[in-house]
Image 1 (cartoon, one colour):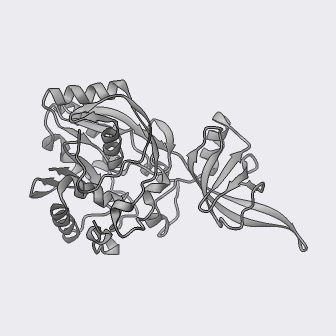
Image 2: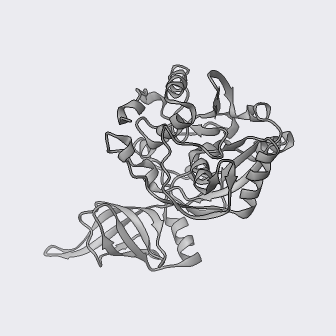
Image 3: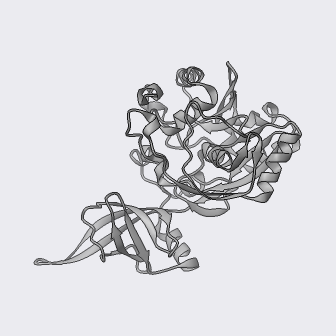
Length: 349
């Protein structure tokens, strides 16, 4: 499979930099087999059936983007230089892996000052990132990060505008519980309390899982043959309760529909066979591309993805490449809004 097979031309005007309000007012492209219909997320209680189970990701995005300064003594005196940090992954010993700009000018042992209360020391500088040890831990670190950090908007939004206070609400799901993600499970951003109540009244269930979305979700595919691509690893957990809900819904004839590619990747990782799943905790680097045999997912609710991305490969695996090309051509022609703050699709193969 060539990377070019997952490319398409996207007008820049269709890249959303703010979400619609209220959240369920976003448009929803409903793709059932070969049929395509233009709906809204608010229509989900009419579209889904009693007994269907939505699998939602309860990860919580942390304000992982920090701006600080490094100080050095020079012949001209003590000078500072700006450093931009994006936290990517906590380490078992309490340190953090992080992207840094400029990376090459940072030295091991150097201290970065973010606020009067928050600072970090560079313990390791690698080819692509650094490891930082902060002066605070636990609740004190969380509070300082919440005060100093900004939401880590995706590059295609951050390149158009800076993150602001509104993103603290907009880039967080209403059911976020467990801090650890540096990117949102964006299909879930379309839900609010009213929609979830209406879905429950319809008889649709919710199973909660957690996958901490990492910065690797935005990394480009750099190989021509996509089978050579190596996925980034992300920490996830499927509880005994969630596994039991999925098994019960299947036994009762309900459809298992993950909300977002993160939830889908996680349950397919935890699958123990066709229609089977067990509790699971660990890191997953599952790569879903055409030819993948789905064990659990009967559909997927997801936003519209970047050309030549692993997520385009995932939806192509679910629906077939020809069908996905038709779906995306329709979305572009009808001016659906793309990417993290954009509209949604419900894919039912």
